[in-house]
Every structure is written in C-alpha cells, then in structure tokens.
Length: 241
Image 1 (cartoon, rainbow, N blue to C red):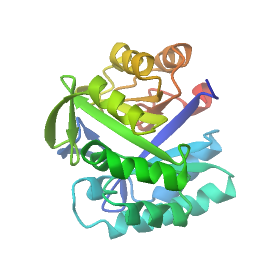
Image 2 (tube, rainbow, N blue to C red):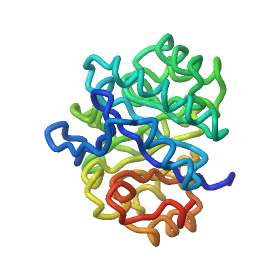
Image 3 (cartoon, rainbow, N blue to C red):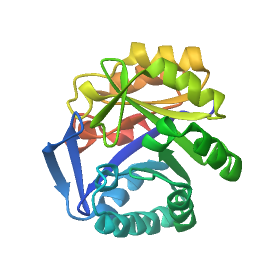
Image 4 (cartoon, rainbow, N blue to C red):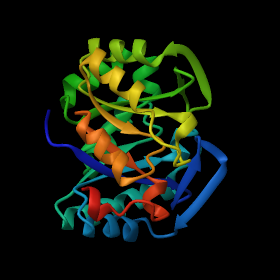
C-alpha cells in the first residue's frame, strides 16, 4: 500500500465552502466565502492533498462560481506543492480534460463511472490510473448517482468489482447516510469493498475523531476524506496528517 493520504474536503456551492448532511442540498451549512483561504488553512496545517467537490455540477446546476473557486484553490496549491483531487458534474471526457488541463492532479468520476464504464476505461487509457478515480456513493448498500439523488439498484460491492474490471485503481467510497453527520465512518463496509475488489479505497462519510482516522490508517485503506469534523473543530488536521 502506498502512503496513506488525509484529504481535507472543500465542498463548493455557489462559490462558497459548505457541507451538506447526507448529500441533501436543503441541509446545508456554509463555512466560508473564500475557498482559497480555506485551502491555504488546510495546506498550512500540513495537508498535501485537497479533495474539492463541485456540488452544483453534481446537481446539474450552473457552476461557474465553483470553477472560479477551483482555479483559486489550484493557485494556492501550487504555492504549497500540493495536489488537488476534484469531482462533481464531470459527465464526459471533454469535461475531464478541461479540469486536468487547469492543474487538477486527479479527477473523481461518479455518475459517469457507474453509468458508462466504457468511457471510464477510455479515460483511464488516456490519462492513467493515478489521475482517474471513481466515487461510489451508497445508501443502504445501493449506489446512488446524479448528486446522490437517484438510486441504481446496484450494490456498492458489485459496482466496485465492475469498476475494477474497467481498469480502475482509485476509489472513493461514501456511506451517504453518515455523510456530514459526524456519526462515524462505515468502516466495515469500506474494508469489505477494499478487500474484495483490490482497489485503493479512500474512506469518506461521517468521520468524527482523530481515533477514527487512525483506525482507517490501521485498516490499510488508501486514505480518508474529512469534512465537517475539521470545520467544526472535532479533529485538528495537524494531529492526523
């Protein structure tokens, strides 16, 4: 297993840094009007990667403010020699190419990866397995797409195996029922997916304490994404990177 990565999450809605509860746009908490300053805060604390999500893009809504925020975050990242992982609303290869050309180190494909594995395979061939990740976002074990608003009827494990066959290496797994609630990660399901698929799995959704981050690290997962627990002070990034 390569180096364990702690990803501070920067979720963007209307150009602001926010967190949603269970992916529900009606249950939103705004934390900052200055995404670049938030990026600098996490990089100063020792982060080497940032996980940036374009929520408006994921909801198929206008996202120009978030694109500007991404550019500003990338400029900050360049100063710290840090890398940015970015996802949300990337529905075709041209969109993937555009953000990679901006300076994003790795894109995360959700709906596209699940609904069109052939295009995922093409992206992997074109840019390589280190620059293309997929996200599996599940509620009650079933994968959801289009900003977590539509169910697929496909189990998370079944989807992970399909993605592995498509050539994937990096996977972000989120239990939607825990996301943004600080109720604790679904470590058992995350480890099962990693074990049975052989993918490098980044754990996401509900992280609540530094001890939980350590548990993810000890489980030999590839990394962890931390959101609300950082913004509300339950975890100090300096203690877990």
